[in-house]
Image (cartoon, rainbow, N blue to C red; front, side):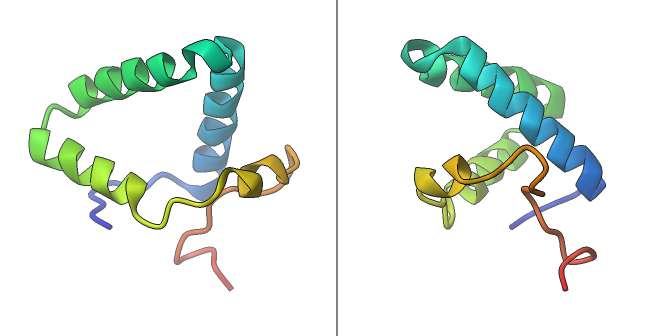
Length: 86
């Protein structure tokens, strides 16, 4: 995975939770549209086509099954980074 800037684990967890809530708020019928729109807005912020393409590939790599995310509680950390992994 290619990374140039790293968010602290706590920030990643907060953003993941915000994203999950936004997906829920969008509803099942508009989930894909919301994710595509969010991606385009973030791509604009990044401003680098190659980095955005790599992020898409990284997101697909080892994508977990949906049942994994359904079992998480709000207090369960979502990401582990090398510096926080034990």
